[in-house]
Length: 576
Image (cartoon, rainbow, N blue to C red; front, side, top):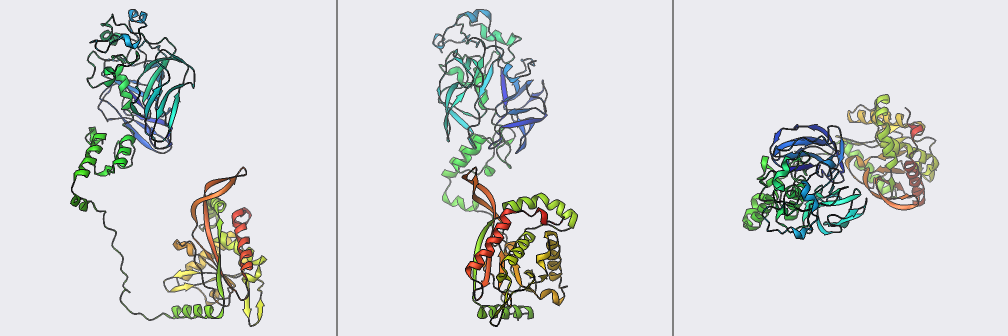
């Protein structure tokens, strides 16, 4: 008797895997759940354990070969089988019966279940192909056969429906992968099996025949050279297919191999911290509300089985309510308590200046804020593409701030009212754009100035902003580096804020707050149709003095900045 080892489902959307290394060789003895081979996919690298104990009789997929989920990787038997010379999994199910049996085309009904040793053997041709349960959607780990559309002996064409499958997400038909004759049905209606399990065998030969008058045929089959999968005379007592009044494709001898395909998906390591948890067990645990980390497995090597999950669920239901208390979540990390708590401190000189200027600004001006949302997906892509080269050539990290600064100073040139100041009853329009950059320091908020920012490229802006910020925090600025600003940028997003309503500090008339760049779903146009896509967005908040700047002025300025950022045509402005 041989058991097929198939490639199980190894995660949502994983459809294939590459054999990286065999841990066992043909002829080696393995224990149930002992590692057989290593598999690599585009999402996980893992070991595939043996579904049963026995001897490796055949390895069907070599190292560095890539196969689909459900493909047969190896055959494990009791040691009586010979290593097959076939190089394809389709050859494995070949089983021949003695010549006399082939002459009896008796249907399943002619082989009564009460016969002590049914001699029916599938007359499958040597090119038989296994039909496996494919993946039927993300997170679908099993399916129930609701109806067979073909019977043993029927001819089927490629893609012709074979059976109907029902899952918790979809009801669908499973088509035939090849053209041929349905030789054997391995899973009956109303049975539930895991993804990758073998459902039937299709070959080019005739349908299987039964030979009730030759009861000695079954025990003699293991001696055949062409039948490495034939079981030993003593078949396991727990093999259910032998007890069912199934069609002729369900004879007693091959039944054990028919029952086995449901087991191979058990090796599928469904989790990161739990060893060898099958998708079936993991889903059952979710349904029952069982934390797998608290379950002790009774399988080989501590593997968690369905019975363990059900037992844990029963125990949780019967446990008294008081037992829920010890299962409380771990306490949060202790809160860091500031030494200033419960004290009184005098304002520093810098804090007094900031406070006085903020109050004076709010009393002397009429301030309000306009906010726009900007799609900076293209800027993010450009930044990711060039940041390595940018740092190598300039020595500076490329953040979003220089892109925002360049876009803002260009818009200031077009809409100079945002860059203006009020002197009495006159509006002064500077001939330059001196951008103040708000810097958070231990002493308080300071705003060093990037002079003539409108004449600088992204590399120059990045270098000067980084230099001014570093020297501001180290208290190494010169007095004139804090004076002369005509417009301010404050990067409130650096602390995670989506946006705020910053205060304009005199004599300036506007300040632009830059929020955090975050990813979220957005509507984009694809071939003229709306579609949902993951995009990068930022909020830009412009606070301004309404005495001279109207809402329309603010909207035009923000519109220009938005258009520049969303176009993301900065390659010529990088300065590298």
